[in-house]
Figure 1 (tube, each protein chain N blue to C red):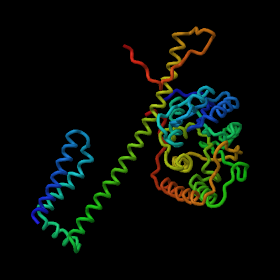
Figure 2: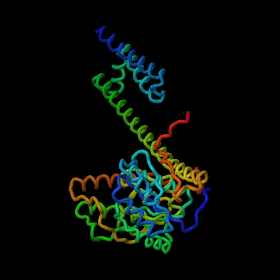
Figure 3: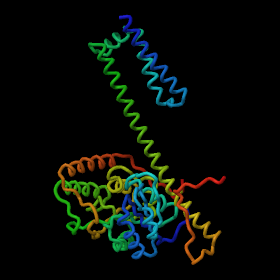
Length: 248
Length: 143
């Protein structure tokens, strides 16, 4: 069994792929807002100075030699959290979209509701985050289905902002999909199937420093198809039980 | 007619020899060669005894024997493709796991290096942080 850190130990996992512009600022702000936390930047095979910038800002950096995608980067992060004995993790974007101040809110809600996973759901209609048309319908469909799977009301299933406790870290360190939407939709299915308690709390998002949700109907259609496929595969997969607290 | 058979037989024999050579030089693993060896032997047999193809097509109720051959070969090729895709997926999963392990080990090495240099050179001028070498940069081997 890995040596456990104190109950309040927190690892903030920041997956980053070519984010040298924003990662330094994000790490500094995280360390300022949460001085007790460890910030782990998972450099997902970046070709720029992401790794060096994050290290200079005071983060621990996990350098993946090749690009694995968000799911791959996150599983590496959960493995680190599991082996180092962290009690809780928060997944936080490197592009400055998530607000570090909201992490306390997430953790408090997790304690109050005794949840294993707490998703930071973007408020509908918050500035900087507006989706319309087919993309919106797809997200509604995902929310409806996943709410039934998780036995709770989930409104934002594609949010990459979530907190996990030790049980969820244990599960995700061995089983975290690298598929499309695997890091959000399928991971919720896996967690709910393993008997973990998934809940959400509303958080505000910042305007993304780069990139906005696309409104192209073709892209929205592709998103719908891939989401349906991801959901169908995730729901039909056999349930994998929660592994015991033993390092492999 | 005879030359046609000879051509088909020669082709099949070449296939078998090629597979055997690849296996011998370890450029092809047995689990992938197996299906090809079976297929090429089957084709050799059919080339020697073409009447078997007619008998097979009668049993399978296919009017033209050659269509049975074509259909059968397409099915085999399809299965082989699917098999290769699953092998590729499992390779990707293994690569992913190894990539994670390498990253975790690199971080661990970096931590150990920092500790080591902290222990061996505790007094750095100006109280500067002991230098930690980036584990990703290659080391000159000691001569």
